[in-house]
Length: 129
Image (cartoon, rainbow, N blue to C red; front, side, top):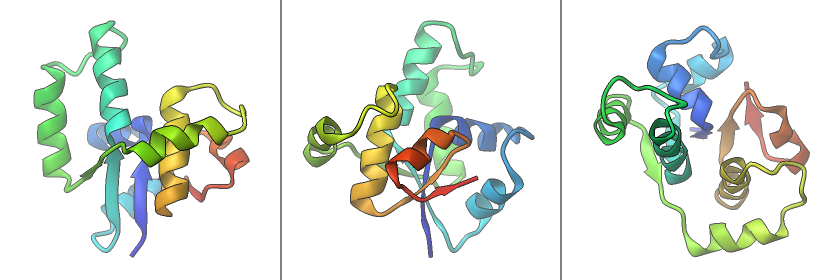
């Protein structure tokens, strides 16, 4: 079993059955033997983007995410003190605060990140795409 931590775009593309999601990522997410996790940071990012009208889910963010996370058997990954304080030690390869938190969560929890974003590679995390 592999524990997959989905980047925000990978989560949304999976929900939307978007062809931008790679075949390898889709297959890994659909594999029932893999554990699928979504960071609270990704939910926060979606909420911010819906609030500023950069993202339209067609319904309230909480309703949409609650349903889709449950329907797809995705686990929510909490953000804990270790995660937020470890961000201070990250090299500045990437400035996006959500992605930096995912890097730390993947590193500390030994998760594989599902993302098209190659910047994760600079941090040495295992990335699937």
